[in-house]
Amino acid sequence: MSIPVVDMRLSEVELVEQVGAACEQIGFFTITNHGVPDGVIQDAWMSARAFFDRPDSEKRALALGDRQRLIPNLPQYYPFQEEALAAGLGIKTPGDLKESIGFGPADGGRPWPAEPAALRPAMESYFQAMLGLGDQLRRVLVQALGQPGSLLDALFPANGGASYLRAINYPEQIGALPMQMRAGAHTDYGCLTILRSQDSAGGLQVKSRDGEWIDVQGLDDCFVINIADAMSVWSNDRFVSTVHRVVTPPDALAAGSRRQSIAFFYNPASSALIEPIVTDGAESRYQPVTYQELQDRKVAVTHGAM
Image (cartoon, rainbow, N blue to C red; front, top):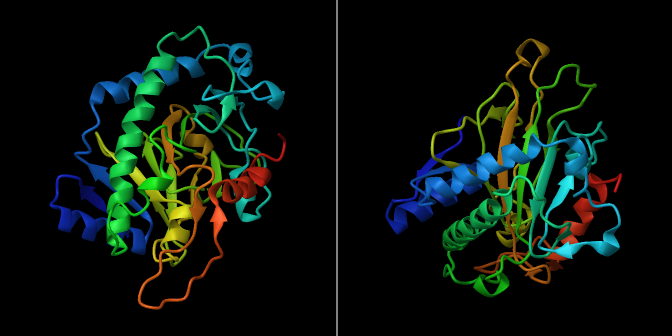
């Protein structure tokens, strides 16, 4: 089995059909001809790489620490091995072999670093581009559920709500501990995730419905999209929020295996009520829950050291 590839230039009927099928079968798909300018992507990619190459002391100045002094919509830095994503599935592992920087309107952080100077404008431009793409994809998803695409518009504010942009660095690494990965097996929290990534030894894998781990190959000028927990609830489990992970390369392939990705977690407002969209007398599988409650449950276990 492979991850479906969807051309965003398809007719509306074809696009809804192909996206809906991918979400039901595996919860992941790759999009081409997405319309995001290459300059916006490259500026974000290169400025993130420049940030990760800065001294550790500069990066750690953006770590969370005292939460009382965080400022909304400013960046947060998560140090190497701080997070253990598999904890969200009840699996105890060593910390993940990655570091990251991210920001979002509903999250607080520290002032942007002076260097690299291009980081702030590049990341903010990328956030806006991803927000527009997320709006487009979410409406396609709702149409695939047989509803008007605008059904959930009121739950997704223009400022991005609880959406979050995160650049991730996976350094070359030799000698991982047992069960330690670059990113442990997990599902994402919100509506959908838009991922820009690269191929390397030790890459993204998706778990199919029959338990097979499938490698996700990066394509030039594309994004990998996956359904997250809130969208799965909205679909009443028709769409699957799929378990995925980033594996650690074997020691023999560690050289040259540095990997980077930029993930945009497209989410509703924190106060948005997540309840299944049911039709034709179908039984709802979930009780209504706010997005903030859903998110807090996972953050509490995946960032156990915070």
